[in-house]
Figure (tube, rainbow, N blue to C red):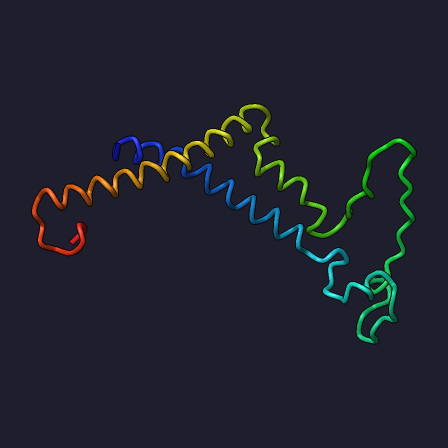
Length: 144
């Protein structure tokens, strides 16, 4: 079991690191403020006067009214500047879609590998713990 654990981790560890990093970037970009500056929500939508230290274009951006055609299910267009504009790209990298079917397959296999590493790690821990009892070890922990 240890051999499989070791060899699979060499291959899938790189992909899991990539998936973790793109997931973090995706969330970072999604949580970034819409206007690029941290201003109160009511102020950002023009419901209250802008503070003197916040430029007017940041406090109340002029955006055209979005109208969804009848019978369609749609959402307003996303931002075109700043980190929020990259959310879709980061999500496609994270899921592997940016690399086609091979990327999606590697992403799915990496998920199964993570499941395997979790279960095999627990299995190896239990085996070491039970071997400790059979050896008659007087140490409290098996790794000593």
